[in-house]
Image (cartoon, rainbow, N blue to C red; front, side, top):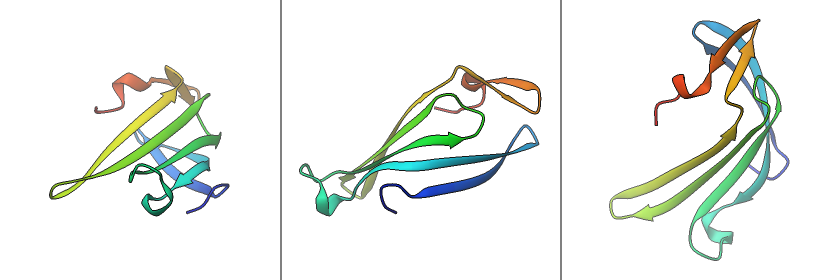
Length: 92
């Protein structure tokens, strides 16, 4: 992974297929970070969200890794003419 990398996805939501592309905006592996945490952010380039900005953070803890995601996104999306409320689609 690196800054500027494009990732293409082929997903389904309630059985409806759609394409999605994100760009890695920042990439900070543990070895390069100042606080010992790894993190990266991606932003939608093409897809159903307007906007979509996703931050991933990883912290070493006893016995594993704690991951935190923060997503700024539109309240709802439209795929193939059908509207979906994102709060109803994501398990927190």
